[in-house]
Image 1 (spheres, helix red, strand yellow):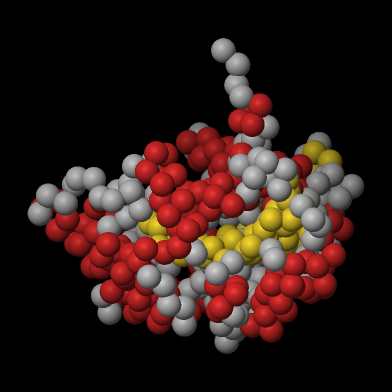
Image 2 (tube, one colour; image 1 turned 90 degrees about the horizontal axis):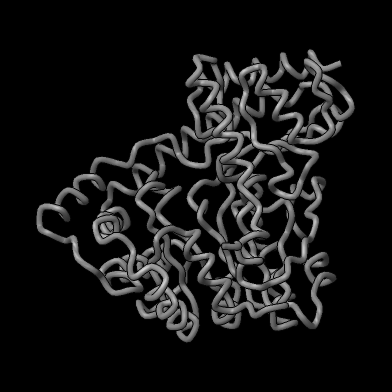
Length: 398
């Protein structure tokens, strides 16, 4: 039996590979500080957990509509109106088994074989694989360090061809922590409207912004953009519900109907219990309090991490404005060696760093081999110890 060509071309996740190596070392009794976390290290709030228990107690354990329960769709509509000044009908909302599922269904719904999808780089490592699975062609646009790793409207326009179907925009960004301003978003929206390009806007880190920055959705720019944008979001990052697997999207009605139909065959429906708890998460006043407290903790960790790294020789660290990652340029270290390992890129850097008990994510996974990604979704104590080890490791390179 042979594997299909599409599936055979899918690259394995480097984040999972590094994490697996770190876990193996820990199991062998070796001390490892992991900077790979892609999820909040907070537990899901008690009020959400209690809601899930209630769902079980009342027997809310059956199928729901394929596109999600109406109560949750209404709660999502209220969220969009309150947070983003966007008015949607529940029929335009599709609830899914995680934002990744929403992304895949959105891409499949609008991308035909051979269609080009513009992807600013650095990018979240899953985007290219989902685009390839849908038969699309990735067109990478290098977002420059000098511009805070943000693609400009001019770069976007230069990448557009007669085969361009859509742009995937991720702000706040994984892996860089970049947050596009309202002015930058508006300029990109003007180009999209000029050329008739759809936008898939991944806003999963929306609630995690710092330094007075504000999240702005490209769907807010105009009625045209709202009708040509699929907004992706979910419960994982804002409410520390990564394992609950609830994502959602808002789309033009015909796109939402198509995605709902597709999802009815690929996934039946998202978990009923997690959906029930998500209604509570979005509507209870405890939600804003939890998000505010979590954001303050992440901000403290972010500042600590940048402060510890900013004066380290031969690396460049730009202070992120959102999410919970710091993207570090390590290219000046290439050519050096550690314990027999020559640093020739981010992957060999990560392999060598593991020997010092530090697990980092290679930037090559995000289209930026000159960088590494460090997550601050870990404790202050682990950040201090891990960065102390990392700085010592860098100084030992010869």
